[in-house]
Image (tube, rainbow, N blue to C red):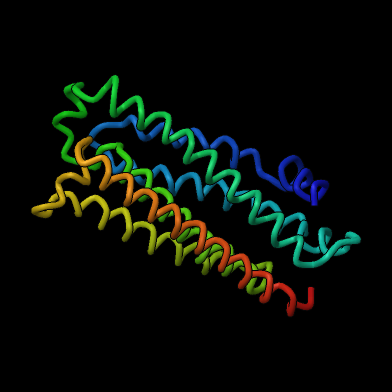
Length: 215
């Protein structure tokens, strides 16, 4: 598995998957739907799958002396590595925005979503949607990826819209501030749990689908 992961990181991965980690910096943009940055990180991962399809990487991988299911696990581990790295970068920038830049004019009067613990939870939900809709959908055929990615685009953009709207409802203004940190922490932990569970179940489903494919 270690050699397989090395192949994923160094050979199969598109440089765009790493380059698009920079979209985590959208966390610092005021007056903009910053949750879209998570979508762009997923778009970078999508580029790796597109490159792998064109180079027949999946077929090459399953011809190696290894379990077929490990090809799926390696892809999931790579995707989770990119997602969690982007989440960590966003968390660092969120900490800066919640402390050093908390009272800065562009953020204090920002009508859009502010970076806080709830925002990090929302990012985890976007990544969970990608893993369930795109990754699991891709391994239905291990070749076709347009329909799964379009499904992810639709669902993720709806999620961005809902998350941007929530803090405007009475009683939910704390979702967009730096107060009530215990409640925000609970929301973050719940979102991370959803991400972990959804990814694990998606991986299991993808393995079952991949096992019956005749490449």
